[in-house]
Image 1 (spheres, rainbow, N blue to C red):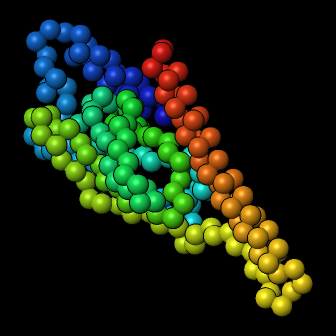
Image 2: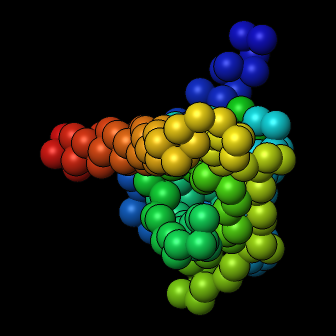
Length: 190
């Protein structure tokens, strides 16, 4: 345990020394295998998707590089709307692979996405396409029997209840997005 911490600290110090010493190029700091940077990602299983509108975490790990400043984007569609999100700076994990994470509001029904990575030679490459889909979609509807007294009034009230539930769900999603924007704003001002 202590030895592995010592090895990590020593490796980090060597990396810092490599960055500070003249004559050491960025390509020497990266994995010089010449392989393209690849993305490792495990999509969220349907049963683990958070409640509609609340934040969910998307995490990736890069291979064939040690660069925590690599440019990575998530591009796709969430509930039929285009999304394009840049990942913030990453961090090295226990295996010394750069990991990147973002928080986004969870989809109502489904989300399809892939990752676009800026390679060292300036080209772009994309990962395979990932899809997360809820097992069931929250649909708010109140049934009123046709033969009930005041059925027209009850139908109108049930329609308003359903619309209120949908608005409540949308409000939660917008509040979650606002919190994310405030976090981004505060991180940019630091």
